[in-house]
Image (cartoon, rainbow, N blue to C red; front, top):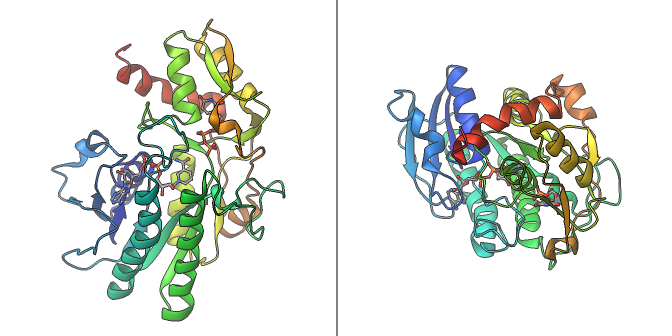
Length: 319
Ligand code: NAD
Ligand code: UDP
């Protein structure tokens, strides 16, 4: 296939480019670098099966030649208010990437009779009242709350995707991605893994927001990419959760990072703006992925953190 990947210079987009090229496909990457990094795809430049367009998905997208699949990953993704690349600080761009960007990408898919895959998120469940989250749970999102620009853009994107599927017959897929980590994450984007692993490698105390009792489950990027690619190759049109089910409190997560890195800096509890409306519990129910895609994650948290450390050390000048 010839596959258009938006957000190609980002953390997940760049890993998807690698995987789909390895599977023998041709990839057209598209990105405006608002939160991504050209370094993430530098190794692909010169590959005859890879081409790149610098472009904002909120504007009309033109791709020369035939496209067989469109994967829409372009969007700011960090919820950290302190980070300039967090969606709190890019509110309009985030809503445009989810709304106008999804519309443009669906237009490319429809014009090419191509399949389409939307990168949605566990955030569409908001601060969930059902645990673990199944795909039929409609969520608990405040449309004017602190995370609304991201959550509502993704919810709109899912609705628009289903409208193109039901009304225009576009061959669509929706993946609801849960917290994922690995090499090529932006060390400065303020998400839990980059913040805490960076602090641990520098021998600093880890900043746990609130009392650290809020839970997440962290998926290693290779597992996630395998799930997404399997979904792309499938015929499933309804949303599918992809993530790891190993749920833990953020305090336990921080303790794990300190144990693995041997950090003696300890943990400091920070009263952060994020403590307000920080989703308290999150874990995917992956029954649908297990049943329909025969997929489940394989990489343990310890193994995944070990695989991520060399990248972080290099970026921090420690290796
Ligand atoms: P990222 O910030 O590393 O990647 C996003 C990429 O999209 C960046 O390269 C950025 O420059 C690009 N981009 C943003 N707006 C754009 C625009 N208007 N036009 C063109 N390019 C644009 O983030 P990520 O973690 O790789 O996330 C990728 C996708 O996966 C996002 O859609 C995000 O919502 C989704 N997601 C990620 C996670 C996760 O844990 N990483 C969880 C749930 C959903
Ligand atoms: N978190 C934290 N310390 C940090 C960064 C994040 O305690 O330095 C917490 C944050 O409050 C949230 C969890 O870790 O409860 C996961 O945060 P992340 O930014 O990775 O994404 P989220 O799951 O909130 O979208």
